[in-house]
Image (cartoon, rainbow, N blue to C red):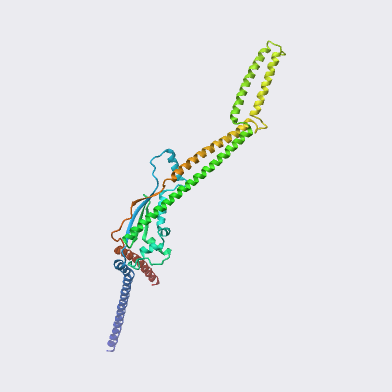
Length: 405
């Protein structure tokens, strides 16, 4: 009996141990399931608070609170004068001007676009008070309107949110969009912006024409001074050389030398012919010899006038070198003066016509219905942005938890 009792007691202890282990395992599983459910619930709670709730609040604000905004659109382009006549010279000049510092209408279009986005146009339209009168009305919701007594920087920042200027790089067409809380305000402001843009283009064109005319006038004065200086030097040379045309003098001397040489050859031939029939001391032969010596002296004197090894500045060849150099410089200066005069006349003619002007393709329109706000689109954007940030934060927290575990 005692052995049986001992066996039953041993079996009961084993059963208790096994039961305790099973109960412990079940308890741990239940605790893990509870933690998983709690973590999942916290995840859904954060998703609702951080993603869904901002999108819903923003959607409700746009749908029930936000003021309607009307958009007026205008399209215009900056164009230059279109010339109907063309020639090789004008084409070459146009190509040269485009290569060397020439302006293009595309550049002017970007200038106009930057002007529309700048603070300068706010001041040109009448200052920040004009912008506040349009966007600070009491019937506009508090979050959308421009509060009064703002600094110019704040007004400019608000301006860039309501005014957009986009350039099509293919056609150089500038698209202007103006948003306001009243259709009349949007159209009026768009008209004023287009007018100010046209005035800016006119100022650019006028300044370019004035600068071109001033440069052309300066080139004419410079060319005229150079030509006058060279002509004075040429006159001084002629006075010092006592000759008007050294080239003509050299030609005359050359002809004289040629004639004397021919006469010398003739006299020498006659003398040789008479030597065979007369005595060498005959008066006729002595006379011929005297004539030949006189002609030789004349030829030597003329050759000394033309060329000399010692006094090259006083010889006719030296004078010819100086004269031809002055003549060449004078002719070149005359050509430059003619070109400068032609450029000045062209600049003066261009001064009288407009080089740049604004071509309005689409005039500012009067909007009939509100274009903004767009609750569904805007709320979807907010939902996507919040979802992206929430996903990033969740992944970071999960990776930190895994690293710690």
